[in-house]
Amino acid sequence: MRISVSRDLKSRDGYSNFMRRLLEHLKKQGKVKVVRRGERSDVHIIIISGPRKKGSLNIARIDGAYYDHPRVRGNVSIGRTIQIADAVVFQSDFSRKHVLSLTRSSPKRSAVIFNGISINQIKRIPKSNIDLSRFDKVFVACSRWKARPAKRLEAVIRGFQIAKKKSEMSLGLVVIGEIKRKPQVTDRSITWLGKIRPRDVISTYKACDYMVHISHIDSCPNSVIEALCCGLPVLCNNLGGTPEIVGQDGIVVPIDDSNYKLGKVFRSLQEVGPKSVDNRKLAHGFLDMSLDTWEVHRPDLDISCCASRYYSLFTELLGT
Image (tube, rainbow, N blue to C red; front, side, top):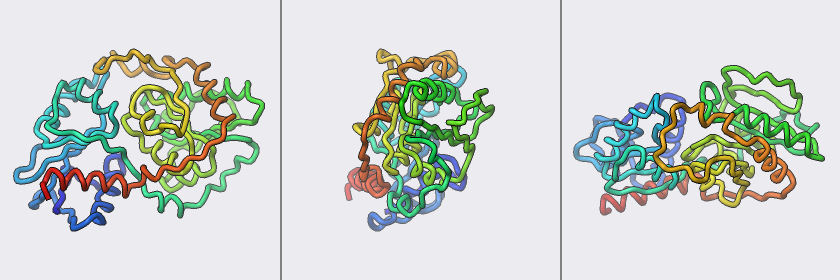
């Protein structure tokens, strides 16, 4: 089987990182060879948007759609990609329904496949030597926070601070990721690491006890996949694909509108930013999680399982 991809994978963004990982493991599934875009291929993977490749089975990988007015026009190209593809892979069932509603499109065939990461590689990365010994329990939050209000960093901090005051334990919070402007808080319980290497992110997860991820709508956040594979339970919000991925390995806090209608478009992402969160409900989530005992084992999120599902989809559609 010869596989090509619609875009250059040399960048370090989430799409490219995942696709490089996926293609590497697809090579192990059978007689798979990754070829250049211009070469003949049996399967052509379209990432986000791109033209149909003649003579190939065209598979679109769509992870989400725009739902704020400044960017909603971008859904036209996403919808066009869905229509020209022979099949579409979504990263969660919520994402599938959300995207199809926003783009008003109907795929010929679709599948839901979670992202994955190499658990064997994670095991080989040592635990960070960051000093968190002064805390009984430590939460970690990781995202590209810069200019992304829907990630709700300020709400994470405020919810944590409320919980910390009520808890009989000493709670800590580690924040990973690039921040445009650090919130004006003086709190020695919060450790700011900024943007660090992917390997150091995993190493830091291993030094923590829980993850908190309350991004308004995420299809399948890689940070949550990584945290679960490191054995961390996840405190998350109730909207998006994250609750599907977390399953029983965490707590879902009802901080978002449970009556949210798929396809709803907001004037701005500021509407679903940190001010939209009930910080007290989030604080209760922090407290409940810190009081429970968790054993998280997620072999289903290993990249080998993810690659096997992609390979099975390809062979089924090719009839081989």
